[in-house]
Figure 1 (cartoon, one colour):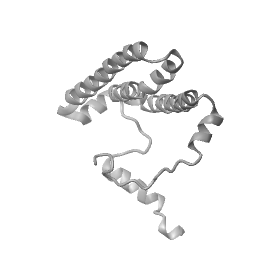
Figure 2: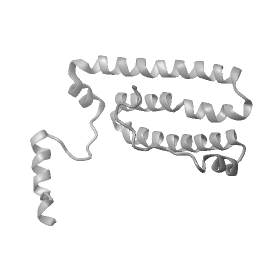
Figure 3: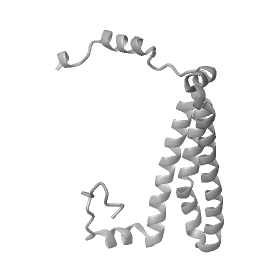
Figure 4: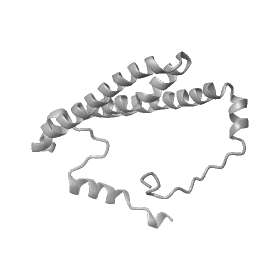
Length: 152
């Protein structure tokens, strides 16, 4: 088993061959230089996608406020803001590369809280946890879904 693992010197050689240093996060000028002529395009497209998600989220809040029961609103809005928050953190990490780790941590924490809101919403929709489990007790869920099943 040990002979299958590459030697530490191999990793050092691979990093040197690419000019990479493991764990090094570039500064903004280094990042802009590495992107070259694509810098403006990458930041513009990322910013436009983030802006579109934020606009759609604002529209979603208005729709939710007008058309859903008060009990569900908070949970639905938490679930719906996954995309805007993810896009915002990704855009921030594109603009400030050294903020990548902090942005990833914020996304992970936020998505974990959002998963909790999803579970809370399903429990609220069924009335209580026992009612939800009783209704889903004999349900069959096929986990072997084909790769293009969503398109068919």
